[in-house]
Image 1 (cartoon, helix red, strand yellow):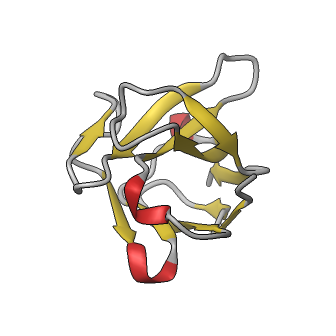
Image 2: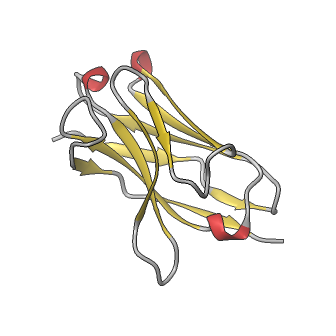
Length: 120
């Protein structure tokens, strides 16, 4: 079973930036799609951004133009660059691995989450 470890969360003022990282253990990272979800207090978990094994990306409407997902297969790492952060971006961000190369496939592994708080 793969292990996913997120880092990079924290407290940031509105308009600020953070970069989240998720490192996956084991081999075969490059053949899987990866995604970031988030869960705000009192709300359901939602998909924020995803990247296929070939590098195609997708974003939720609320973050499009502000967030960028990328991957470095040599480092078994997926990133989420978050710019122009807003208070509604506050939540716990989870990295997940999909069962195959496409984002249409369900997730089979999740990280423990990293807290992002956007507040003045």
